[in-house]
Image (cartoon, rainbow, N blue to C red; front, side):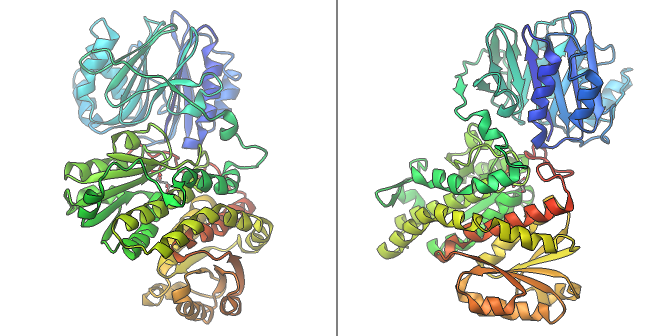
Length: 608
Ligand code: F6R
């Protein structure tokens, strides 16, 4: 989604802004722009397309003077990707400049009111209403004017604002979409996310919802909407730019695939003490845990797929009903939940608007929400009743890999922890689950050693037009993720089906050469999936089977195979997902796709 940067200090602003935007590229964008104040006037440069175009037209920003400025990468929502619709947006007389992330839901209404009062708009964006409102209602004080217009704006947004007559100030507003302030010495920064400013400072303030920051060269003051000063505590970022750098890999995605043993290890290591799962982050008493009669999981995309895996695991171990919802649908079906329902929210970014809204809806209905989140201090992490952080480190590639694996690791921890409290796990099973969990990082490493073999398979399959992923039980849950990974980065059409469901319609799409990827790791249904493999093969499909080592039956049934080490059945997804990620990566690479930033996608989806 859109990225915001801002700088105020003694250095030339534009090169810093453009470098910052470069580091936010991973969020997804289709145009970019900067606006500086040179002490007398605004200088605005915007370009459609890549940041390189903006670099070229501005000489890496050196052609633009001014030591204060705001910049933006836009991911189009209202109005096509174009120079005119790119941010920053100015008010009609050019005295206010605004960059915006999120959506102003009532912009049509505001636009029509302003237009009736003679205000002329130049872009098709929702953002322009903000700059126009600022000018229309300007009271002589920018902070007061911002506070005045905030209640008029419906939706979720983050804003960076400058007033031409005051080159000593940037105002930042957060209502929903994330925003951080980087604290420097006689210079300060504004950004949507840490990587944009990490080579400048490690000390930040994270704005909370409805906070407004007045950023000057030598001071940062944060206010609430009643203009009370809010005391913020400084957060020091511990991870380094190396963690957000490619480290010799051609793509972040491959680097992050390779980092999975570490991501899983870090996520579980501190939470298993003397053979016991310790989840100090959960503040529920055993009594409260026993009183839940249902679990409700909400998430989007890959995080939703973790939720589907979790349903199989929790129902198997805890014997409590589990509902999993795509977060964007949850709120609008008036879900039947109450204080006896435990809600689990899963999100890498902790900022996904749909997931956040679904969590609020569950909380409004009295449900206790535990969030599984990767980004520390993000909105979902802050607003959940409890948060369990995945310790995957920063994930830059748009397509998630290591965060998915770390989320699964938390699901296993929760299943063991709750299972024990509910008295549903025998001592022997408990020990076995814990030892298998501790062994996962090494087993993932064994699969990563097969990268060249999988690359070789990808080289033969990347030209296929349609791919079906099939599986049964937990393998079905995992096939959803395999299919998403492939389609989102390689643009190959792909669908996931319960293997038994295929013959109820979809099998009519199978013809000579259709690629079917059959997940056959789940022992109990091995024979059944092998029969499904034969069904599609007899209609011409080429089948790649993924199963546990020493499964002769699968070797005979499938046209080619990838084997993974054995583990207990609930943890199979953590191993079987890895070859599918590597396969998707290389199929996309052989096709020449832009792997880390696939078209139309954004890393952090902050609009509903
Ligand atoms: C797919 C992918 C997305 C995200 C989804 C939710 O590879 O990354 O489907 O999983 O947008 O994002 P988070 O986890 O940040 O809430």
